[in-house]
Length: 324
Ligand SMILES: [Zn+2]
Image (cartoon, rainbow, N blue to C red; front, side, top):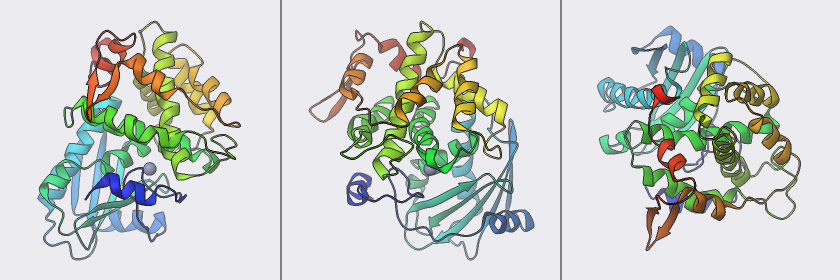
């Protein structure tokens, strides 16, 4: 599927359960039913450092065999575990519903009564599509962080949108260029439009996913500058994950921001939240990308290693746990 075309088709819709780059209607269930279904008759049990995964396949799943599903889940789980330093919740329950066609998604993740995800996968999905999938890592980022009030949905969707490609790049599942390709092409969709009242009051698709992702990129740069290169956003997000235990916790945005800020010895997350939540702020995205040494030349993403923040850009997509 042409994700970019699909995105443009739905770009003007404002629906809470949409994903940033793959969106269609989700018929939804009660999370208690999904949780009971997975617990009641699991098909697969996986153990990762830091947590266990229980998976159930709903209905007739042929030819989506368990081995293919397991390979896919393990690949996504290893990327998210590398980013957060361990599997981010102690127990995750996943219900996979086979559907028509070859698409992955839609997906929804809840934090009650456990950490639960329901995801639809087309029976005709290819191995290549499973290998290149980003939806699973997006959902896993949701489970790593506490839930926040719905008016700040952008905070959660933005973190998943921002972290997902980075986690996959750090695990060498995608090239660094792909991470920044999304920033160049799609982050401009997160800028405020006419009538915008700030991130907490403007619940459009663009502001929720890409406006939210821009908040986290701004935070990434500010944490690096404030700490003179000692910390990354990843350090703050790991601390939030450890303190909350993931999405079974329900926190305020301020509590989440302050927990991350404490870990990187600053106030970047909280002060950025104050700045962006109640008013439209147009971000100098081109300037940020230039500082990071990212540009597009003849349709190709290029890096400039002499740019002022080139070291940060390189380190974002590298996994260097011993240095952090
Ligand atoms: Zn999401």
